[in-house]
Amino acid sequence: MQTKFLRRPAVEAMTGLGRSTIYQMMNEGRFPRAVRIGLRAVAWPETEVNDWLSQRVAARNGEIG
Image 1 (tube, rainbow, N blue to C red):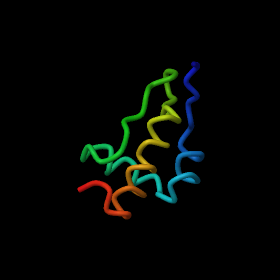
Image 2 (image 1 turned 180 degrees about the vertical axis):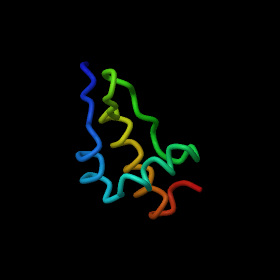
Image 3 (image 1 turned 30 degrees about the horizontal axis):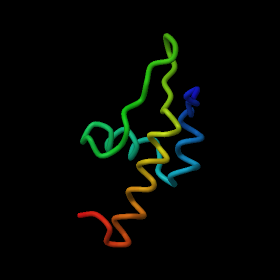
Image 4 (image 1 turned 60 degrees about the vertical axis):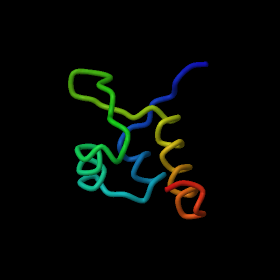
């Protein structure tokens, strides 16, 4: 299976988070880390962002933590 990478605007749209919040949460270890895909470009593996979203829903539903 080929990994699809999402650029920041797509991650923001999927999560509802802003740029600074995404990077702050990454630094705190609470959001998936970006992958360097070029000299001046980063992206997030779509599967990791989807997993993060699923964990948020599961936490809300009392399934974890």
